Image (tube, rainbow, N blue to C red; front, side, top):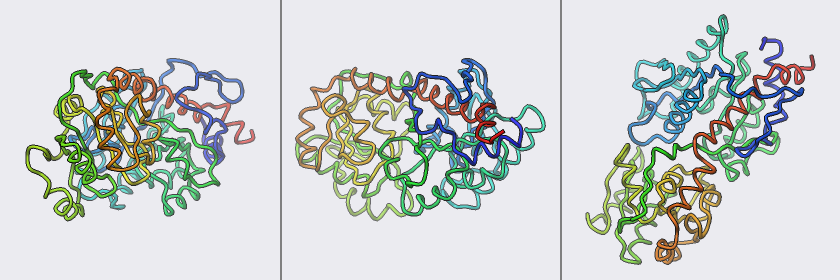
Length: 394
C-alpha cells in the first residue's frame, strides 16, 4: 500500500467495521476482492510497556496479547511483538524500554516512549518489506498518533467508555479501525463513531483443564477493589456455609479496602486468601472450584476470569453488570442474580450446570482460533489496496 492511499483510508472509516463479527463467514472485500486464505500478513503487535508478555501473574491485556500472538504465528503470519522486557514469544520479540514498569501503569512517560520507538521501527521497516498492519493494545498513545504513520492501525478498545475516554475516542477514533470486546462495552461508545466490530478476548481452550468432579470450595478472583466485590462474594458464601477461596492482587490504593472489608473474614478454613496466582496453579484453582462468584458492581467490559472458569467447566454466578450478561447464559453456563442473597440461593443450583456445556460455549465463542480468524478479517479489510483506493477516491 502506498502512502497516498494509506492515509485517507485510515481517516475514512472502513465500511466493513461494525458489521464484522466472530461469526462472519463472508470474506469479500470492497471492490470485489477476496480475502486470500493462508496468505501471511506482516503484523506489528503493540503490547503495553508495563508487564512482560505473557504476564507471570495479574495482567489481563498481556495474557490476551500472548494468546493471540502465539496463535497468529501458528497460523503462518509474521508477527513482531513490541513489548516489555522479559517477554517470551514465538514471534519476533522487540523490547524497547530498559525495564518493565508494573508499578507505574498508565504513567504517560513510559507509554509515549514505548509507542514512539515502536512507530520509529515500523517506519524504518517500511523501507523494506514493511508491516501490513499494526495491532495496538497499548492504551491511548498509539491511537492518538495513528494519523502520523502510514501503516494502518487496528486498535482494540481495552476498557469501559467513561466521559473522558468517550471524548478521546470521539476525537481520535476515525484514525484507526476500532474493535470492541463486548456489546456491553460498545453500548456506551460515543454516538458520532461509526458502528464498531465486537471481537471477544481470546482464550486457548486446550490449555485449560476440564474437570467434571469439583471440589467443595467457591472461587473469587480479581483485583481487591469494591467494584469487583470480594466482600460480597464472602457474604454470599457464608450465607450457605460454603468455603470460599479468594485469589488476586492487592494493587496500590487497595490495601485499606482489603484490611477493612476482606481481611477480618479470613480464617484459613472457610475463607482463604491465596494472593496472586498464575500458571498451572491458577488453572487448577479454576478447574476444581464448584463455581466462580462475580458479584461485580460496575460495567465490566469483558471479564477474562469468567471465560477462564467456563473453559474449565466451572459455572459462573454473576451480577448482571456489563459483559456478564453476554458471557453467562443463565441456567446453561451459570446464573445471573441481582444481589448477595440471590447469589447464595444460586450456589445450591450449581450441580445442575453441565461442565461440558460451559466449555462448549467458550470454545464456540471465545476460543483463540475463532478470535484470530476474526482479527485476520479485520487486518485484511484495512490492508486491501482496493478498499484503500476506493476510500481515497482514486
